[in-house]
Amino acid sequence: MNFGTRGEIVMSLDTSAAPNTVANFVDLVNQQFYNGIILHRYEVGFVIQGGDPLTKTLPLTDPRIGTGGPGYTIPFEASPLRHNQYAVAMALNSVRSDTAGSQFYITLEPEPGLDDDYCVFGNVTSGQAVVDALRRGDTIVSAVTEAP
Image 1 (cartoon, rainbow, N blue to C red):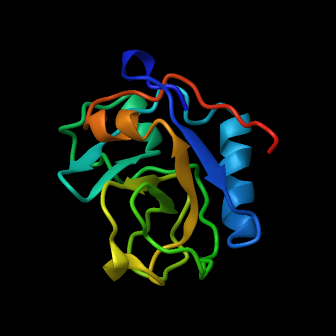
Image 2 (image 1 turned 90 degrees about the horizontal axis):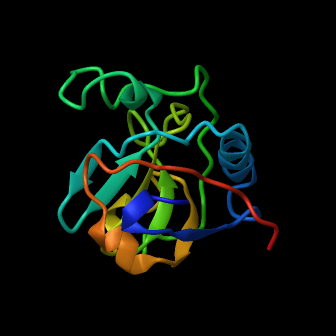
C-alpha cells in the first residue's frame, strides 16, 4: 500500500485465520477501491484507520466521514490472530457484528482489549516506520496484491 511521500507498507494477510475477510479485502484492492482514499482516523498510540470511500469526495470534517463502505457488508469472522502492534483488522459499527465492508485499521501498539471482538486478518510486515508516521488526512495513493 503506497502512501505517496510517506512511503509504502507491506501487509501479510492470513487466509487461514480469516478467509472471507481476506478475500473481501483483496477483491477491493484488485478493484482499486482503496486508491485515493484518505485515512480518516488517527488516535495516538492506538490506531490509524481508513477505507471509507466518502473521503474521496467529502471533507474530513463532514459528519458522514467514517460511515462509508463498499455498499455491502460481510459476516463477522472470529479470528485467532491477536491485536499485536501493526495488526491489520476490520473496523465495525459495533463489536462482533456483521458490519465490516471496506474500513480497516492498523494498531499502533498491542491492543489485547480488542481481541475476539474485531477480525484481525493480517499484519504489517514491512514499512512499520511508515505506519508510525501516518496521520489523519494521509492518502492511500495505490494498493496492489502480490502472491506470497
